[in-house]
Image (cartoon, helix red, strand yellow):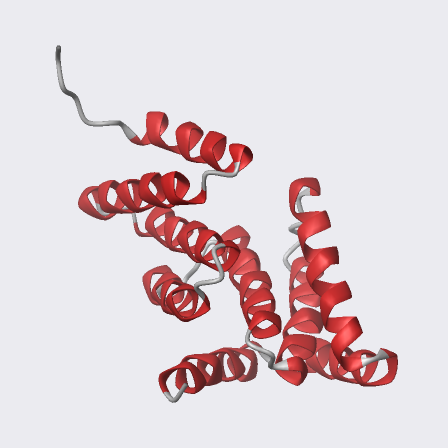
Length: 178
């Protein structure tokens, strides 16, 4: 029997297949292996995307502290000129994590900003992500109620990207003190 290393083109479909089958641990393993390959190749954009994928899987596994760390690593890896598609995903994942961490006001502002950001950079939300975002939004709606959610979502839509980055960094700080 021959042993070979998975290429990036092999690993990603396997990872997606594992996610579809609900095997989160296997999906996490493949995503982590893909991350190592992208980093070895020096492809920061794809490495950042893998950090986002890993954070999403960790969130699904309810490992929020690790997911926040992966989200932070994704943003650091993106650098000063991030891919707009990945940056949009970053803001949306930050929204989901804020909901999971019970940070309602932060989550609502992140949601408002993420929606506006996608519009500004002309990156529509992929249909495959729509139901996930709607589910997290409903969860936040149940927690906050209509008035607070609408007010904070509108506030978030008006904030500058640096302010939003600051809100996201509070999740990391808050995580460290938990």
